[in-house]
Length: 123
Image 1 (cartoon, rainbow, N blue to C red):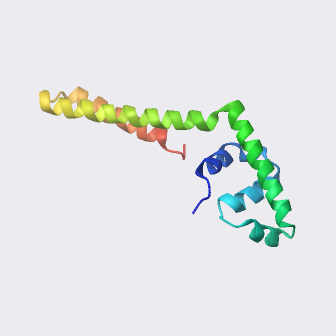
Image 2 (image 1 turned 30 degrees about the vertical axis):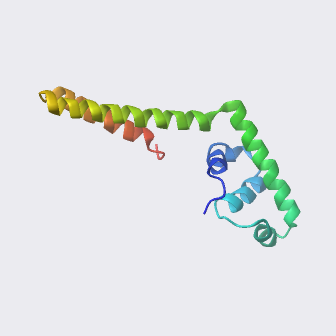
Image 3 (image 1 turned 135 degrees about the vertical axis):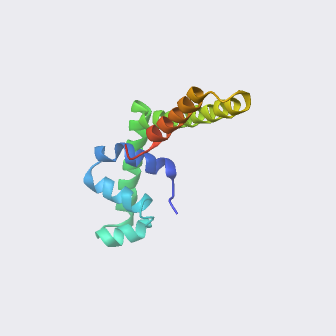
């Protein structure tokens, strides 16, 4: 199980801005769920060296998020898209109760489809 989903998200957003060693250590720690001792043994350095590199990387990732805010903005946009999709579904339900306008139905389906498409992380 992942240790900290927030840090994994920050790694996704800002990982390329870390050194290759920092990125490697933090990836082993968070994504592969290896312990500090396991990483140290695999890399051939001390456990303390791994811990220091991970702490520096965490600090840099957190600082980048504080300055740029991309991860927070991404989460806010996804929450907003989910709310828009929910409201479109409610509009469609009311439309079914009150007379079934084909145009309203088609538009609400299109809104929900666009929300799902925009929320797709593979875009």
